[in-house]
Length: 305
Picture 1 (cartoon, rainbow, N blue to C red):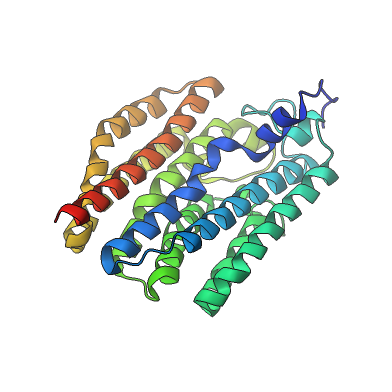
Picture 2 (picture 1 turned 135 degrees about the horizontal axis):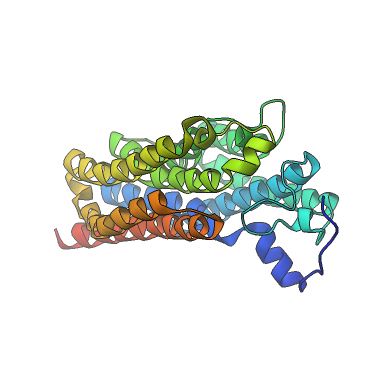
């Protein structure tokens, strides 16, 4: 750890600690799952959706906090890291304080999840347990997810397929093929966010002994995968509309196809931390905007048709 830098006001410290730019990634699948459930069966349970969203948000915050402390303790993060500030590495909070906050966030997720388990049974319990374990395993254990090449796969699973499918199951008691497709539409751009993050940190991560997908593929390979993730997202919207007529309104998300093209060019041209950070933020916004537009389109389509 570097020498502590002057600590900003506590609200600013906490803002950095929870990494707000990542939080929409945990809300989008809940919104998408609720929309699929409503379009397919008319199911509408706002309280369930709210608790699911808050629980997902708590898991994301817990994962971010645990990663902040663990990377400093493992000497993965240092003064030369190129991303946004990490509160433990800066000395603004101790590793113990950040770990305690992480445990508290996971605890809140469990509390919310208990009610969801009562409603959805053992499948929801399995999803909740696996999600919390994955949050810890991202930075801890013998094979931390963040240090290997499978991070993007885990993101597609937990921020896409599992999250969307879990919400649909909670609301309808079943999971359709359309729900799985929607999970991919949500999860693929979330994985693209991680690809940008790891491409930015390639040099420092290599020095720390990490072998992320961005490191293994190299700059050109990472560029191809990033483009493929965005292209597959748009293709997923088209497939979703073809598979389930009730979800044809999701095609409204295609209005952000030009943004995907712009992002692909920006990623290929990124030549430093600032450029990658800009692409990262825009990629996260792309995911949120595309999902929001797709869901709005489904709601309007269903209401009109």
